[in-house]
Amino acid sequence: MSSDPVVADIDPESARQLVDGGALLLDVREDDEWEAGHAPVAVHLAMGLVAEEIDTIPVDRVVVCVCRVGGRSAAVAAALTEAGFTVHNLDGGMLAWEQAGLPVVALDGGPGRVI
Image 1: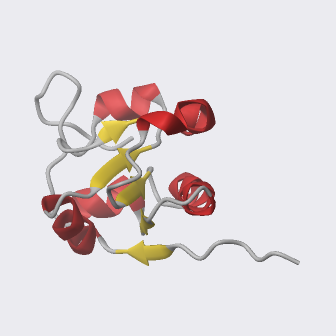
Image 2 (image 1 turned 180 degrees about the vertical axis):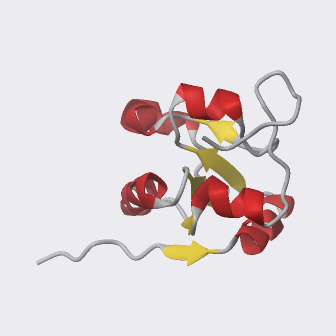
């Protein structure tokens, strides 16, 4: 009987530190959410596309998954962990990132908002 992969939930500051150290911040929200506001250093890959685009995710970097509050990104993080990636989930998602005072930009580069 196999157990679900264990994925570490991390807070926004820990996520920022990992990203500053070279980790990939993978935003798995939908296009409209991404366009309204995202972390400027994030890479966007909607949850529904992860399986078919998994080859675009670098296996030699730590991946930090993020969504709005942490549910979708936890599911993606578990799947990526099972596929051999080193992954963390941003607990509280982009809402926590924004509440921690970390930058959020819109698609045009101006100030963004988390929807």
